[in-house]
Length: 279
Image (cartoon, rainbow, N blue to C red; front, top):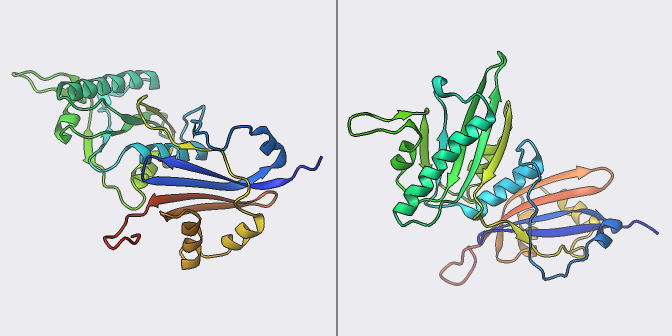
């Protein structure tokens, strides 16, 4: 039996405002292994190891961030003073878990929705053998920035005593742009010395897709599009015609000599102008 090659399209939905179509070569043998019905909604499989040195894990993390966080939400950066630097990743995990419980408790006390978060922990190694552990947290808004920062204490303050902080804490309001918060999420997972991984709250909306389509694109069609400059009007128009109501934000493409072109797109929902046209 001939093992034919197809061009597969998988359209990943990231919340209400972002779409991440993935177009890539797929073998006939793989196609036969897919038996799900066309209309069924399926969550994107999270990477088994949430290690952010992996490209697929990074892409999933950014999709998860864009689908759950935006205007009014926070990004919090947490560091440790030398005297409180955790000896291990396990110790750091316990410390930051206590911090998140404090945030969750304060939200509940204020009558706010439950805490949603994405937590990235980085374990950086220096040449002299020392290590620096720090955290980045995306969380839903509602609390004041100062309040969120002030919960990063090792010893709680009293009326007569200032709190003793684990280290430096800085909370900023997220400022989405055309890519949503992909830039901030990308910063959190960018390559650097050491190891990074993430944890998340269980109440996040997961990226999802319906059954893939193996008939929408041809190899010849993609070969032609791949030759166009990515900032050209023809290139942008092609993709926005395929996904009407969505505008192209970014395209990541790569070529494999044995299999062909791979496209990973980021689209955002087009806003309607007052006259009824798309913005």
